[in-house]
Picture 1 (cartoon, rainbow, N blue to C red):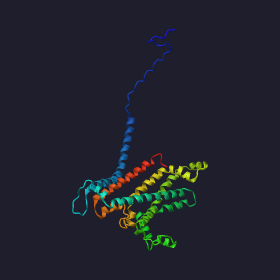
Picture 2 (cartoon, rainbow, N blue to C red; picture 1 turned 135 degrees about the horizontal axis):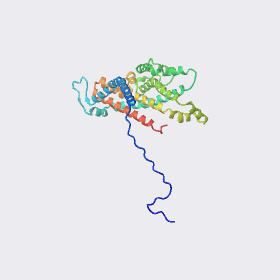
Picture 3 (cartoon, helix red, strand yellow; picture 1 turned 180 degrees about the horizontal axis):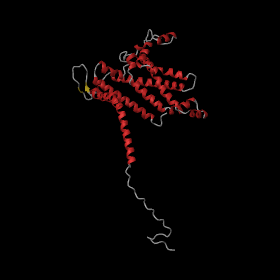
Length: 330
């Protein structure tokens, strides 16, 4: 038997090659397609027209002041100084690091933010877990818990200021009646006692906000997951740590971002209760910024502090988003 010679085709059935389908030229849209496209484009333009007033209002109340403030931060602009405004370059930003009040105010702000957010998140989570249970009168209790959040901040600050009054305040009266320490404390005259009063006033008003957000997150968690965990013998701590907190992560991120930024930009409670005192022991960045604008009329330096506040706030928000978007959280 001889081998097939080179170039020969082996015997056997040969499958004919299938002809390639002819490529059709793209069709132009017919009258119906053109009419549909025209309707979509008209609806889009109409939507832009409806949104235009809101966009213009937002630009007028946010974008324009922000841009003007950034421009102002590069100016030597002190009202009633007798010197016309002039370009300052980065002098106002350099002044931030040489000002003997800025870094202490930054430390006060950061310390208050860490402590207040930790306390409010822990208490708010406990409230949310309690209010998520079924019990008689739950609706009434929920409404009562959320009342402090509806009180204006300045009103609640003045209320707590009167409560910490050394002679007529409710706090000293209760401590004296129960024979507890700190019964005769002048709360708003000391550094640490002033911070304790500010923290109490801020937590009383803002903890319900954390509870509202976390309660909304708990409401969407299926109850079947907890039933399966109970059947598997999981303890209450394991259920909280392994199930509730991971599933509550989106709501927890919202609560932490809002409360951290709000605490970092705190002004009204400090202004109403201590005025930055005693001395400068409770001066925070927002209060220092207010002083630059409205006490010293130094608009250039005040603009630089405002820009620094915005940049730090954006960095905090970006850090939260980055941390909570990680799969290894919790």
